[in-house]
Image 1: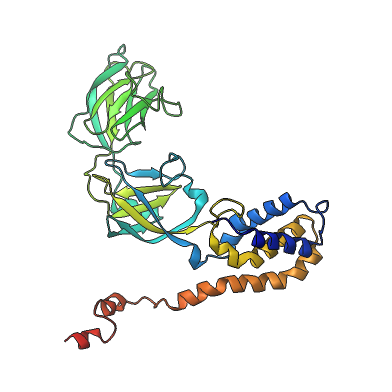
Image 2 (image 1 turned 120 degrees about the vertical axis):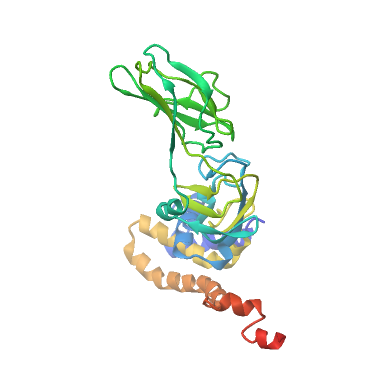
Length: 341
């Protein structure tokens, strides 16, 4: 439900009063709205992490895909625009209802689930042939996307490398590093690899030298229900790699919705005074009116404390976690065992 015009009008009026800008010529209404939304979207959530803005977020895995980007997600995906809609991710994390390890440390994550390449010899070069095909030997399938590397050496002792770019859960196109693949939507007929079967076709830009090994490096895995999740570089990485679709559930802090957008959060109605003072403060700072900023700062801080009050009260109901917390709760409280026996 959009914010009622009465509250929006109050915010605009209070901003004008605090900035001594009673007319449209001194401060345009559109400028007020821009400052208000700037405060709501960027200042408010960094100053205060409110209980009312903590939500449950869910997304769904796909078979044989371990990495889920919050940057390049398609419009219909729950992860679309994630980095702008949500501020931070928090425990607990559940996959298919099972509590899952959550970390933001690559070191911790890959210490538990080592990231080790398997090197396989395909064939040797003859100094003429550039195209090779077949099935990756060794039976190391399936293997991870974005981690396939075909390599050899040319007659001048320069390395030749081809890497994969996934286009589906099963197929990746191959291209020279730092060069875009010929297609990101359909299978390249001369440069591709199948992550599930190991079948490949690779055409090097120059022929491998006679007698030089042509190798491929892959990272094999065994798919099953994920038991750990890494959040790093705006990506969720799951281990083990999912063998089917699973629901991933986590807690996030949501960014407040822009004031004038349809469907504005109703919580903004009770915070209108704090929003008005915050927007006015930004207007005065932009004018370099430091004296006026100092005058409104005590009331701004007071409003900030009032907004934070409900979160403080809510958190006082949260019991401090100890090694006995879950045990006592499982029996109906600290005296539950005696009552039940």
